[in-house]
Length: 352
Figure 1: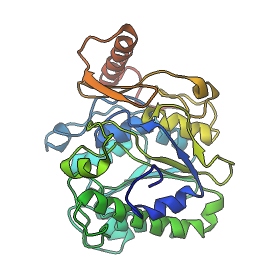
Figure 2 (figure 1 turned 135 degrees about the horizontal axis):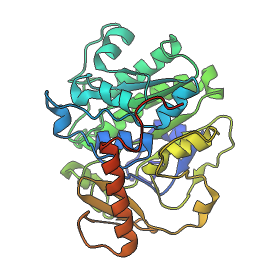
Figure 3 (figure 1 turned 90 degrees about the horizontal axis):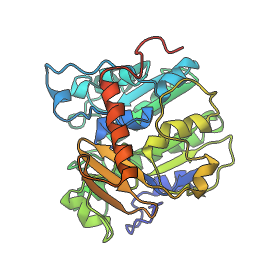
Figure 4 (figure 1 turned 120 degrees about the vertical axis):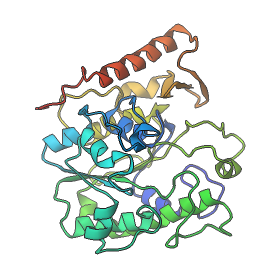
């Protein structure tokens, strides 16, 4: 609703959170689906590996490339870097993926339920959004996460084609699963935010709400998305930042930016020193961005998305003929993926 939803009270907890933070406008996804989205925003790259297919095969060997992303930079500075994931470690090798992008450890379904939530049963095949947010707060409160920390939460409850579970909160008459799962996540996030806001962490800790990618254009989503929805797998995604030590504006429009800019923006916001990294994006806070009117690109597989300065998007094949400026950027994306696969950009070893 902070971006103009016509559905009353669909996300009151996010509205409350946004009143204490900064809402970023014109922020788009740059890749899909989930595993590219996670790797892409944390490491500011266009990842080649996506997750569908190979990651789920029992004999699949995940790439061993060690990426110089945001978790690595924070780990180097003494942060406890933890990925919380709703699925099991075997599902898409989430433990391997977490280590590859630089997390020092991962807390996945079985450990969340067994260790943090004292043996709770899963509600469906994965940890529900309510369980996930309770597990995060419990981990902080009991010292399972050491300070300073960077905790990254990958929830599944709002995923395509899912509906709210037994601990969910349906929206209105419950007839649309997208509205139900959105409302359920909001309720779960609200439980965390209210505990956080009244704790000592509220004066020392940044909280960021964003997404790995937009919703897939299923019939249920198209039904509620509005007449301007373009029915493609790229779109604006939320970015809301709470920072107790910085006087951020209530809303911020840097012009069209993408999740390629997530990692450098967080590094900028935290005033990290200029460490070795391989970010392809730039901080949304850079002053030059205020006046830029340039296209941005999104990409996954052979699909290319051109995001224009007015926010309109067009998709085509990576192999299509494009005007020189776009063709050059397309070749750069392909080259960056080539050297990612051959492990020639990142040494995979000691990053000091």
